[in-house]
Length: 350
Image 1 (cartoon, helix red, strand yellow):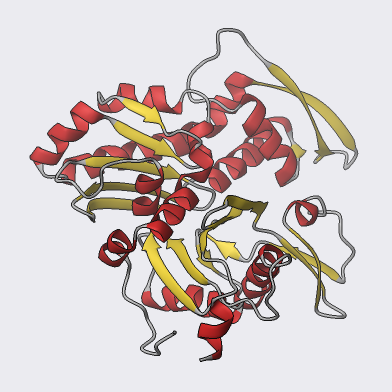
Image 2 (cartoon, rainbow, N blue to C red; image 1 turned 180 degrees about the horizontal axis):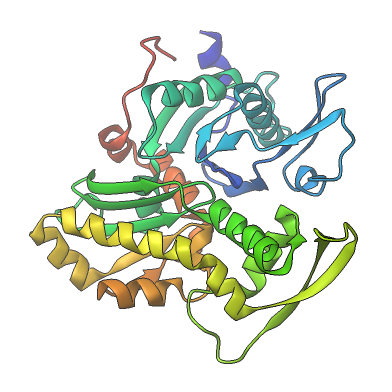
């Protein structure tokens, strides 16, 4: 009863709960929050110190009593308590200017394809504990396809490759369902680790995740540039223990990322091999859609197209396709009812 009452003064929200970033879409307003999925907590008081961008700035720089962590691993909740606090912080932020003491929004949230029932329940419980009156789970590739404006309801083969932070989701969709799919734990985070390890092995230099991410964003590539680009990278020399600066080229960055890119391509191929021929014909004609932060890696669309002999294009604003898909579902109850995953709880929420 109270949930229904407070729900009248609450916003309906779509959430992309990602390993790297959390995005929130409010019905009628669009994307209102786009923050890193990072939380800093003071372990002496158990209070939140910072969330999102401000917490990311603290990574690797905090004293022992302040813990900065990512509460999601490979797209699923790994730290329930911190995830709950992060989501509550964002939900309260959305309702700051609303006349409601206790926000009780209805929430649509995307989850990975390979998620277990226990992991689904963890997501539902975290969102309910953060203040939602009802949680509806949808598969991330389906939400991404809707956000990319693909005709998922038609009897047409649509192939989407969502290269996120923790996972890469490859799916062939038709008639509001996933026909064939692959989910792998090689994505943006793994590419960052590839660069860290490469620089350690080749240059005997230890760098942090933020520096490795900077290398990936600035010169990371899957195909060669027209001209060689070098950037300065600073870290700790493993031989002397002292600070050191080196130059890293785009070719070396490509070499570091080669293994992860090859694994993604192999899984795209194997997904196509498992797909019914009628749908493969559609995909050959319509092409493969890339989304997620990893799709911004220079030339990844070209190399996938070359290796599969299928046209590949990057979705418009690929970082937000999943959350825009959940936002579209807030407006389309019929489609939502058809693609929503069954709830793990039998308890009805008003």
